[in-house]
Structure formats: structure tokens, C-alpha cells
Image (cartoon, rainbow, N blue to C red; front, side, top):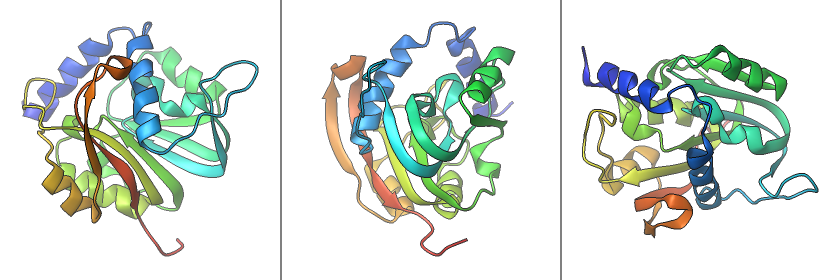
Length: 199
């Protein structure tokens, strides 16, 4: 078995039955702010993002994608390699979100306004290939990743600022997160340019 395949087994066990995802959703609010998303509260919730009619592809969004907190979108889709409990797909469907179980290295998506990718690349099999794919998939890439996390059973990749800047063709921002939204570590984030021409 490959390191990536072993990591998928670990990741599935980490999500367990997906019943309590509050900790991860709390972290997503930090990711969203660093990715340039602005909360647009309404009477029901402060945790809401108005996407102004855009199409959004979420790479590695797992069972509780940020897209579940988005409104006013044209079309949205979550891609993740893991098989989640049956009700996760139903939850996405009820919110108007398509879900596809596939490795990010294998996507051939095109024509999206925005790509979301957050806390995902250290879980992939080939980081450079995933970035090549997402650059072809959309006009704008909103990204948040953790840097310099040692390779372990659940994380087959160690991301560096130098490599991410090179592969993305831009310069991300880097800072230390110390406990905000229960997050700790060296963060890399930004908004990057994907496919410039119309598809």
C-alpha cells in the first residue's frame, strides 16, 4: 500500500461517522477569512458567505465543505477522494451542492469562477499535479494550507512556502497562528490566478 492510501484509511477513521464536525468547521472560519471571504450575516446565522452568483469548486472539502455556509452561487461542487456516510451526499444535494468522489490528481475540471482549497494539499498524493489541475479548473484560486508539518501517517506531504509559491506562480502570505479558532501552526494563504482565458 502507498503512503497516500494509508493516509486515506487514517483520514476516514479521523472523520469517524461525521456526526460531530464542529471543531473542523470552527477552523474553516479562520481559513475563510485568510482566503479573502467576507462573512455576510443574516437573521439566521453570522456564518454565511455571499458568493455573488459565482461558480465554485471545492477541492478536498470533505463531509462539511465551506460551501455549506455559502449562498447566492451559480453552481457548486465538492471533490474529495473519501467515501463518506450516505447522508453526507444527501446533505450536499439538499443545499444544491454536487459531490464527486475522486482524487484531485485526476480531475479535469474547467470553467469555474473560483476554486476553494484549504487544509488539503498535505493530504494529497502529488501536490504539484493537484495545483496544475486547479490552475486549469478556474479563474481564481482561494487557498489556505499549513506549512512545514512533518510527514506522518495522515499527512503524506510536507508543504513549503518556496514550493507552493513556485507551483502557484504567485506569492502567498505566511504567518503563525497561535490558538485562533483552535488552530496552531505556520499558515500559507492567498488568492491566486488560475486560467485567464475563457473556456
